[in-house]
Image (cartoon, rainbow, N blue to C red; front, side, top):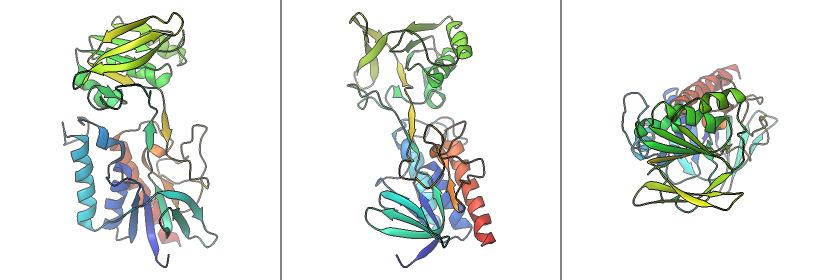
Length: 306
């Protein structure tokens, strides 16, 4: 660990790759630490992206590769490793302790992302991106005038079902309890939609299909009765968890998201948070990329103040 970088970026999803592009263009000596062998984060598992300006219908894999190629063409340095701890030294140097090595930098951008909570039922992994989705805002438009289902009972699930009800011919919303946990205002709006059917006291036990999700096996937790629902698309909205566990040095909210505003500045000078790991309103590819640019701008400002 002889070298001290200007900037270390942790994560190579849209936020991290955007930060790499902006950082290299700002002539910062930087390193991107990526845990997976493939860049892109969650977007890699998205079958088709249709809401990123200028790239309608691109596959998530192709988009991730374009982001990575852009950063590489500019000269960004990458290393594969898993972060175990981030230590802000008393001398202002940040130490990123990984499984394989330790790295040091004057500034760090945490762009480690988040992951959707899974149902863990048969068929979920098989049909992920092929009828099973974790983002109604991202993928809902593919199911216009079709039948969809949402599982979950919180605000996100209700918002997803409301959003889909404006596009789809029918929307089932499945929840394991006999009442929803989400805001009463959202419940009222949902129940007012004529094409929404609630399936309460029920859990999805299996996702079935041939090449894509086509049917849900649903079990009533009170009676034990099982039935199949024919669907074209299935949206899982049972929670999202930030990849923030190893970053004990920065402040987080009650859900584990790192607290940072649009400047991406955390409570620790010289450490920034960008993308899905940051506490924010909207988690999309475009907002993650914007975070990467903002975080580098803030990092530059911090470096100039030293």
